[in-house]
Length: 149
Image 1 (cartoon, rainbow, N blue to C red):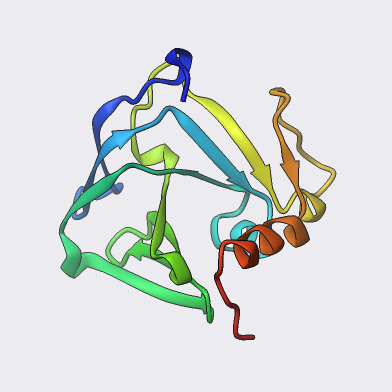
Image 2: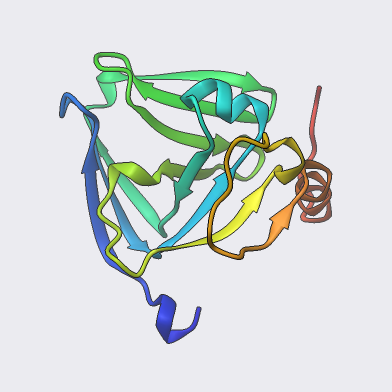
């Protein structure tokens, strides 16, 4: 990560009703955007996720998760419905809804994934890597992850 994209340190965010709070440590001001059909169905548009080195969760009793496939979990606040995270199960990687956090004015889109599923009715102004679903799955398999359909 270059100096332009230095870590933010800790960032905290809450759901709409404040029942759930999440603090990310060593968060980067880089957002991944997923255009897959499931993300768009889940949130009404693309999922914009941010990650950190670790996280702390408060209000876990208000969190509901849904296994959207054998390899993915999506979580939300069961009180107000705020989307909280997408978890890639094989690597236990969490991608938190970027809108929960104040990432500052230097935050940028790092990449857009499942670009082959993006509808024509929206585009982002930033020029970013655009990876198809097949490319993302191939990268995960190359990293040693398996998928059970």
